[in-house]
Structures are given as structure tokens and as C-alpha cells.
Length: 306
Image (tube, rainbow, N blue to C red; front, side):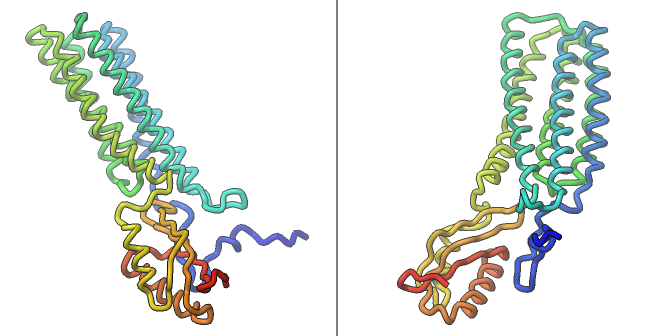
């Protein structure tokens, strides 16, 4: 019989431990599944309509929809992975899968923005015939689909990954609105250069939204200090606790979004007082900085650790 402790036992929280969960709970994967199905369905419709009408604009927008579908599929997979409990190989669990997927989605959106800008520049130099009526009808349908998908995703705004997928869909919604305007102007006036002009405008809006998600996911993956926590103030607060002489090797990061953690070394006046000092430190960190996942190592003034 194996004498190794079970994973559940090793990850159990005892009295006094932080109640941090290593899994993402209560997040519905139904929203992403429904959004993925609707996005793929309309992408197929748009591709078929684009070839029938010989409309490059619709085919390009279908490519945008396919990119959104890929992002939604990646988000759905990430949520499934993130819900898995910790194991003997991954003691922190898989909550970072969400941030990783959001980061990849954002990079894909940046590549899409670059492609839109390049294609728009080519069309400004060499205008192409666009069937405005077909573009108008399909774009109105696409806007309705995107509004429905955005509404479904907005019901789960606690997940950074779902919010990244929502940014993709909102970018596509802006694309549909621009296509509506483009189709209407081309249909009634014949001015085809409005299509690349509006595409550049939409690309800039997508770039602005995507950059925020990219920065947030990168900061989380790089274990940056949570934005609502002042690292220097935390160090000063620790040093101000009665019995603490110095603080070093201090690290603060998010174990999962909204769950900050702290580790560090505290030089204290007397190792015998460590239980009382630790209790004061935990209470201070929880009340003043919202940090309850704390791991600290005490050291005597001469460098001797407990």
C-alpha cells in the first residue's frame, strides 16, 4: 500500500490557513458554448453569401468571425482546464489557463488589426467594386447575431478570459456596424472608398480594447503585483508591526484573479514572540491590504531562522 499522502490532503486548508481556492468555480461554460455556436453558424452563412455575391468585404468579415470563433473555442477550453483541481504535478491548479488564453486571444486580435490596416490601405489605393445591397443586408444580420452573442457573454463578466472573448465579439459588432454604414453609402452613392476608411476606424477601436486585455493578462502571467495593492506600502506596514525589525525577499502576486498572495522573510526581535507577531501580521494584511494568503519565514536579528 502506498504511503504517499493524497492530493486532496496536501491541498486541504487547516484552521488558520487562507481559504484560497485553486480552481475557478461557478463560471458557466454554457455562455461560451452558445456564443461559439452562433458565431460559427453566421461565419459559414457569411462565407457562402460572400462567394455568391462575389463580395470580398463579406468574405473578409467572415474571416473575422472565424477568428472570433477560434477565440471563443480557446476560451471555452481554458475554462474547462481552469476548473480542474490541483494535482501532484500542478500544485497551484490550472487557474492561469484563463489568463494564458486571454493573452493568446489578444495577440490574435493584434494580428487581425494589422491585416485590416494593410487590406484597407490596398483598397484605398486600388478601389474594388462592392455590392452595397448585399453587404447591407448581411451586415444587419451580423450585427443582430453579434448583439446576441455579446449579451450572452456579458452575463459572465467575472472571468478575464470571457471578457477577452467579449472584446473580440464587440470588435466584430463594430465591424458589422461599419459594414452597415459602408453598404448603405455604397448602395446609395457608389462611393466604394468608404469601406476601407471605416475599416481603419474599427481597427483602431479594436486595438484600444485589445491592448487593455493584453496588459492585464500579461501582468497576471508575469505574477505582477495586483493593481489595487501598493507593494511599497505593504512592506512599510509589515515593518511597522510591533516586534518586526526588517522585511526582505517580499513578493506579492495574484494566485488567481482577485486572490492576492504574499510570501517573505521577517526579521523579528525575538523568535519566542513569533506566534503573536504572525497573528498581528495576518490581521493587518487582511484588514489593510486584503491579503489573506500569507506565507512568512521569521528570522532572528542575527539571521537565524525559526
